[in-house]
Image 1 (cartoon, rainbow, N blue to C red):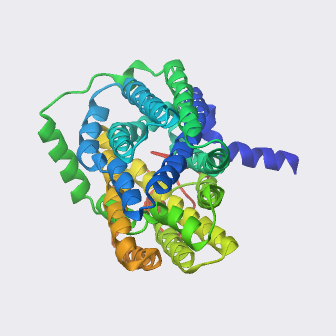
Image 2: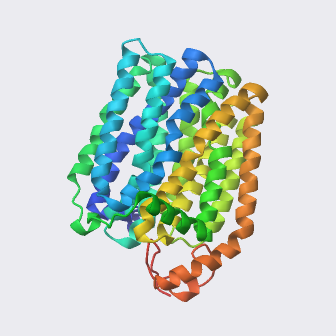
Image 3: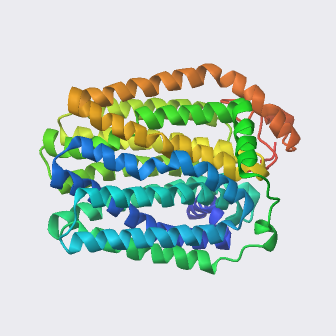
Length: 449
């Protein structure tokens, strides 16, 4: 029994056998806790200073809007240059942003325009960082069969931090104020910088790539993603969910204060509940053997996400709201991690950076438009109706994706045939095929018949 549990744990954490990925997990784990602390503290600071739902939306907008314009360029850079050095630069800039934010808050000179400007700066940094980091995962994992597990564990890392960070931030904000959260976030970046510096990347992994005209490379990546139905459909679904559903987080401070009649600690617990559900979702994905069935998982996860938002919107009970956000977190992160896993498995290596930049645009780049819209609509129609409308949009997106799922399976099949995957299980988005899977390639697990 004990041996079986150890075997299951080794399977769940199998990507950690790669030294570079272990370093990444250690450093990124510390940094992400600080990131979530800053996110919660900044949202609460803006609402405390202004009491404005609209300004909450504006801050969310400025922190994410650069993604739409900058991420495609970052994708080209990720396909051209040493991704580790690029990440060292972005993490250093993020450290400086957090340090300056801590300075203006602790000295008592903070104003809303400063928060908005610093949010914009961080948005620019993240627009470069996220697609480069997503593309870098494949370089850190020594065993290709562990790629899917590494992606799921990376999402688990994000949501483990999402579980811890908001809870700590809620307690710190309530006791000593927001400034200390920004200080701790600045210090947390040192962990990931040290981890990146300690990695040993094979020279071939970051050999200079052929450089062509930037516009041509952007166009080439766009045409590749647009013309391949599975990539296009996944990116469009993510864009709809990010636009209509993900902005729910912008309105959580409003629900915490005005509907649930709580304070900063209530806000922290609500965000922690969402993180708990998301962590469960990513651990579930990490335990999966392959990408088989992820098409149906994507559909179901979108439905769970939407239903969770609807329950949260209608709830006036703290416990029910916690449960609703746990379901929302489970659905949202299961959706995103599943889409990430499928994309990383089926895309061409020489276009990985550009496709992951489009993934970043769909997941994060659309969110600022949603945040701004949610903030504006909440001021006119109220936060509850705003969330319910977003829920409806997500359900429509899930229905359209489900309708096209059989066609997407057929599109994926030739890709896996070219990759050398056994024909009987070449449907990368298949739902319930009975045949035993498959030769490992690009994150799919080999199993014996």
